[in-house]
Image 1 (cartoon, protein in one colour):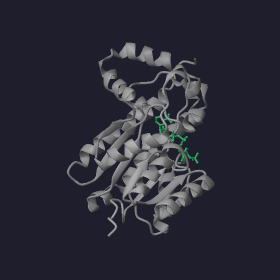
Image 2 (spheres, protein in one colour):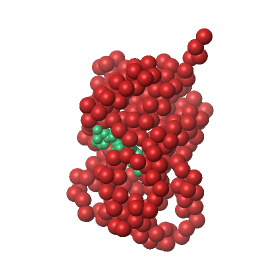
Image 3 (tube, rainbow, N blue to C red):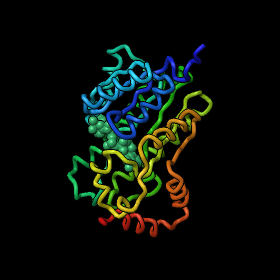
Length: 266
Ligand SMILES: NC(=O)c1ccc[n+]([C@@H]2O[C@H](COP(=O)([O-])OP(=O)(O)OC[C@H]3O[C@@H](n4cnc5c(N)ncnc54)[C@H](OP(=O)(O)O)[C@@H]3O)[C@@H](O)[C@H]2O)c1
């Protein structure tokens, strides 16, 4: 008799699932039998991922195009999910973007939009599905932060701060969920091959030129495995994990100078 998969009968909502780490995270959940609700702005790319995963893993997939950076984006998504008669057991808050450079080198909309997507939408979706998770004593939240979360980031200040928020928020929610059966994990990738670097312009920085770039699937797999075990934080890549662990021992002003240096144009 075929064994029941661990995610059978549950649904994972994955944001930023049209490409990159989000599409691969969605695939990890599909492998374990989770049905999927996939969201991002690009309807066509989403449909493509949804069809591929449905066919390959025999799971139900729903694609919902939504700009989560828009105010009310999370509520609009939740309304569409309810309208389709779907439930959400796991929220994967992955959608996000960054922008390398001095704060005022990009327009205000780009900077505030980053907070709206990386932080506001993540809190909104967690809030909307949290009580149901607690009541069901299962499911959880997998948030995607970054190694940027572990220190301030001069010349990419707002992005680093947004990811520090995600890490802090996730760890606190992990503690709040202790003993409830609800899992909370914060995935902190280092540089990863995706469209992120192009949008953020990080390929032009010293860090971007020097750093080892991981493929997105191993990053997603590590995040998914950590979520299954309810690991609080997972930093992908041995060198990234070491750096994240060591930064707290570096005097703050020296650390700020180091990060400014590596975030400078190469
Ligand atoms: N790649 C890296 O080096 C790296 C390192 C550390 C952390 N991260 C984090 O990993 C996460 C995933 O990034 P990625 O590397 O996979 O980048 P990506 O390839 O650019 O994917 C980003 C995803 O977010 C979606 N998205 C962007 N803006 C959106 C919006 N306003 N509303 C809804 N969806 C939106 C994109 O789809 P649409 O464009 O179709 O909306 C896409 O599906 C992000 O949170 C990022 O900060 C990435």
